[in-house]
Image (cartoon, helix red, strand yellow):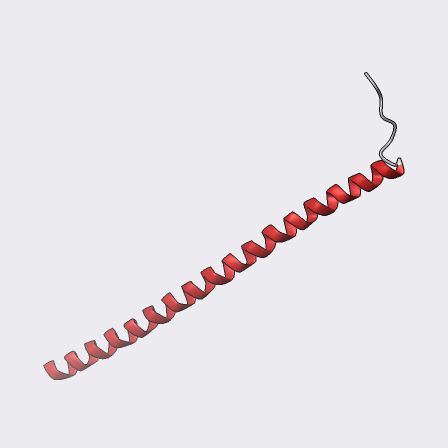
Amino acid sequence: MGIWDDASTHGIEHELTLRLERASDLSKRAKRANDAVRHEIDRALEIADELRGVSEESEVRAGVAGPQHDR
């Protein structure tokens, strides 16, 4: 039975190796996707900040911001 045990062990080791390689590939892909999403979120936040600035500037120009009190 020693030959069968060796073949069985080799088969299991091979299967585990394939699964580990697949898991590693998936992990790398997930990291790249996560990095891309983080970049898009950062860019969206930058755009939102720019739009807030434009909106506040428009309100000031239109006199919508309310009265300014001198102290």
